[in-house]
Length: 210
Image (cartoon, rainbow, N blue to C red; front, side, top):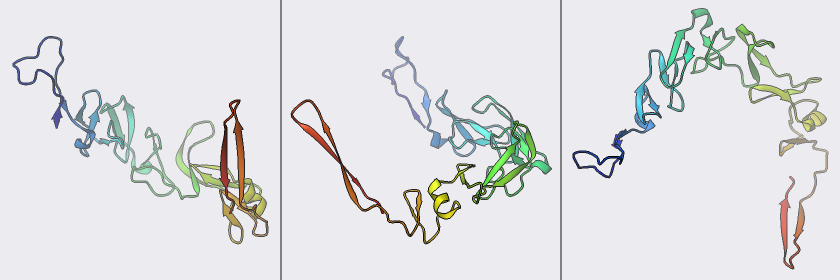
């Protein structure tokens, strides 16, 4: 622990109007059971069934517990989930039954090509979460990207009639090319920027296609 030093250090009392000193702690000094209180620049304890958040500036419920209230810092109230709904929703506010495994944070875990669904279309929480597989074949052509199913790149669909650019097709720059296509040759594109002054500026952009 270090201190913020003041110009009157060593005297019996500070001159009027110059300020004050306070102990200074760093987030790394708080350990695994305390959080860093930015309002006090000091470490504080997390409450029962809580642990410091990933950023260390607040507390969150431990796996298997849902949030009842959260006013920041250590002002968090946690409640244990029932045995038949041991998972916690992604936002941490509800308990839910998971169809497969749990993550280390106690949340539902799906396969890498599946999307986790916790609520119906109208926002109602499901009793059991769903792991939805993205259908990458005709006529859907969807693939898993950032926790959701999105339409595959059109060149994949055109070349392979799927979301897969497998051999002998060629994957480059996020696009799928047929092995029978003639790819563009190496080229140099030149763009000339001319001002009203005698001097001119030439910008050469090297573009390479593989």
